[in-house]
Image (cartoon, one colour):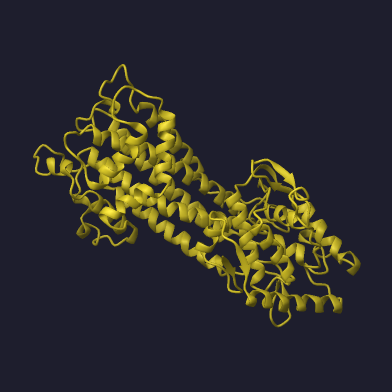
Length: 506
C-alpha cells in the first residue's frame, strides 16, 4: 500500500504503483490540505472576483469572464476539448505513473480541489482502470495537457479505457462512475508535468540497471578478447575523480578477478601493451553516463517536491498564476540522459564488432563460428546492433530545443519534455537490445576460449545464455535466441547471481 501524503511520494512509490500494481491511499494530512485549499476557492466563488482558472477561460481566453452558472460546464468542456491526443496508446505503466503523480500534485493542497477528485483517481488506480492515452498531444507546457485530459475524461465517465487485451473500451463499459467537476477542478486535473516526470522516473530506474549490465557485458567482452584488467585498477581512477568512472571501473575490476583466461596472457610479451579504446576506456564512457544519470535523478527528485499546477492556491488566500508547469528541467535532463545512454550502446557495439573481426579478436574465429563460410555466426547480429546504434544517434538529438508557439502566441515557448522523455525510453529499450548482442557475443567468445575457463561472472553468464543459445556450432535461427538473451539483460536473475558471488555492483 502506497500512502500519498501532503508532502508527496518517493520514486520507489511510483515504481511500485506503475509496475508493481501497489494499491494507493491518501493520508489524512493530504485530505486536510485539499479541504483547506478548496475552502479558499469556494470563498472566491462567493465573492465573484475574476480569478484565472476559477471564473475565467483558459490560455488565450484568460480574459473571458465565465458566469457562475456555467462554470461546471466550463470544467467539463475544458477536459473534452483538451483530450485531443492521437496515435497509439501509451503503455499502462506510463499512464499509471502519470495518474499517481497527479494525485500527488492535488494532495499537496495548492490546487483548490475537493478531496473527492484525488480519491476518484485513486479509485481508478486501485480498480486497475487505465485510461487510453494517445502518444501524441503534449508539448510539455502547460505541462502534459492532452495526456492528462484523457485521464481526467475517464474520471468524469467519458473517454476511453485501455482494455486488458490492448484494445480500448468506453469508460462506461469499464464501469466508471462519473464524477462531476466543480470550478477550478478540470484545470487542476490537467495542468502539470506528470506525464514527462513519470516517464523520466521510469527511465531512471531502467537506466540504473542497464548501466550496471553494460559493465557486466563489457567485462565479459574484454575477457573474451584477452584484454587486460590493469586499466581498471582503482589507483588509476582516483587521479581523475569522476564518481561514475570510479564506480564503473570498480565493477569491471571486480568482475574480471579470478579468471584463468586473464591469467593465461597476463605476462605474455606478445600481448598488446594497450587495449583498444572500446575496452580500455569503457569506464570513462559508462562512468560519464552514470554521472549524467545522477544529474537526471537529482532533477526528478526536485520535481517530486514541486507544486506544478497553475494557478496555485496559496495558504494566505491568494490565487496566483505560475510557470511551474513548464517542463524545461525535465526535457533537458531527459535529452542529456538519452545522449549518455546512446553512447553506452555505441561503445558496446564497437566491442561486438571487434570480437567478430578475425583481424582484431586475438585468435577468435571469424564471426565467432567454428566453421566460417558455410556458417555466418553472429555476423548479422552485429548488423542489428549497428542499426540500433544508428537509430539511437538520431534519437539522441535533443527535443528540448525544438519549441513551437501555440494558443494564439500565449504559450509561445514550450518544453517538448513529453517528446524528450518518450524518446529517452526508446533509447533505453534499444540499449537493452544492444547489450543483448554483446552478451551473446561475449559468451560465444568465452566458449571458444576452451579449455581455458572464464571468471566467475563469465561462468554464470555462460550458464544463463547457453540455456537458449547452446554451444558454438552450426548456425541457428537467431531471433528467438536474441529475444531470450535480451530478457536476461532486462531481468535481474543474472545480475543477482553475479553479485552473490563477487559482491554488489554499483
